[in-house]
Length: 261
Image (cartoon, rainbow, N blue to C red; front, side, top):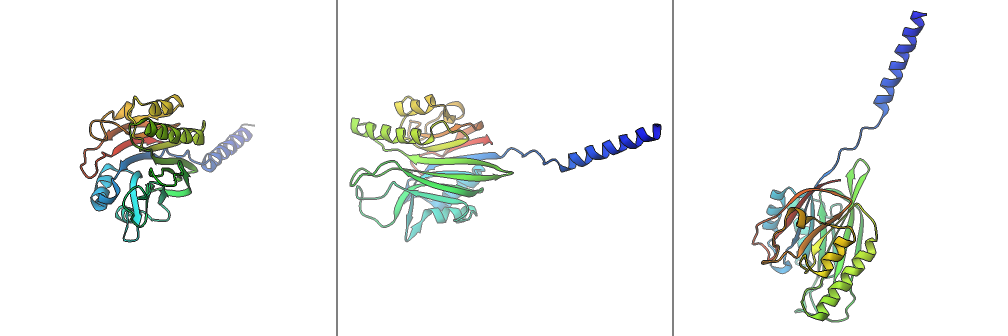
């Protein structure tokens, strides 16, 4: 009887050991470093900006006022400087087009998302459809494969500037389109130049809709002159810290946020 018990115990231990080996390991949390920056398109020094991005440790980069022209494709240039593949790791959403409100120039301008993680889905949402002026606006978005079955959706936008009643109405209409697009979805990062201070109605709408203004919590410093108008919003993502970087490469300062997913 004792021998039978020993055999049964040994068999049970073998089964448990086999089950432990067969069980998939728990997915490690992805450490995300998101850098958002309005790079001021035409005057952008891509090589110098890439050095700032590398030094920040960013593995997700969102940009506004980035240009793609026949003689100067800033998206391709930046991807090359960072060592990221232009097809697998970059998405450009046209919208902030140069002209007809500015001097006519070839190519397009807009927003971009670049990442060391592979992009598995892309979308560009038009926020306006002006026939002439002002400049049209859009939102660029991607879904990134973080590995182990985990993904994250990252979007970036650039809302219309101005303090006139007409400008405010335009900006609010664009913000409403964005809020309606996302609804109650979570697991999201939304960045951009919102041309709105934290006390602005637009900013309050996002907070009221459950978005975390990460700058208010982790980096409440000016991003343009003496105003904070550039944002990294999250919903359903753990944010651990952040900074507004000191840089004179653009009229805007870059924001870096650290988070896990």
